[in-house]
Image 1 (tube, rainbow, N blue to C red):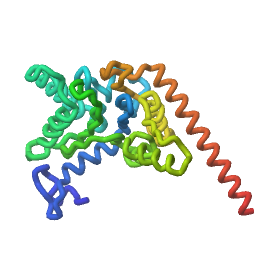
Image 2 (cartoon, one colour):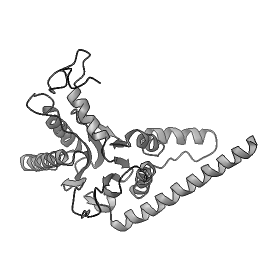
Image 3 (cartoon, rainbow, N blue to C red):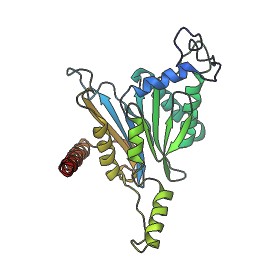
Image 4 (cartoon, one colour):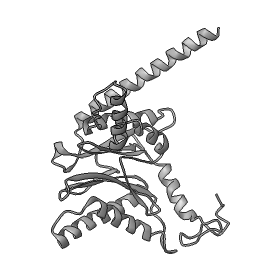
Length: 287
């Protein structure tokens, strides 16, 4: 990446000779240095989870630096990166949801909310007097008109995609690898079920992961990626939008988070124990 003296990274409105916009790349880097944010689209709803670092023991963590916010009755967002930048995106999302309701008399569709937020974020990459948002936003929403729920992510460049499983922040890549192992993509689950049925090893009926199971899996992923020796202590913020909540975006009950955390830590310990046993067996065989 070019140094600050090259002249091509002084403005987000300037392309480098090889077609790169360095200010946008720097914004992505700010997100990569922040806590991990995950989203999972399940059979009965959407789950969001964010690793919120606790910068000091004196912090009142329940009310400070929240990463998960409700923007409308049937929509919520999770942010990671610069929290102050994310707060502006949250405010914009609330304005878009409110304006849509006032204009059309119905709740804003998830895709429309994602597209409007992405257009807002993209605008800040077009002018030299502005800078890109150093924040990625995960959007969980439900459309009462179509009875469908979805998960979207808006990146600092202003692009948005719809996902079955989305990840942003420090542990993005390994988190994606772990989420790909879960039963969240209907087409892949159906294909695997058909293959199993054809071999005579199953009924051919695949089941997608539920929100209750999704909470556990996201907690496991975040605790697996967290390095206690290097990373700061953190609070796990989680929310969901599901049948059980009446499709309203609400925080996951603390008791459920506590149970998921205990289950995740137990699973990680068991996995580490099995790995150590395998290493010992390999050493004995070599001797």
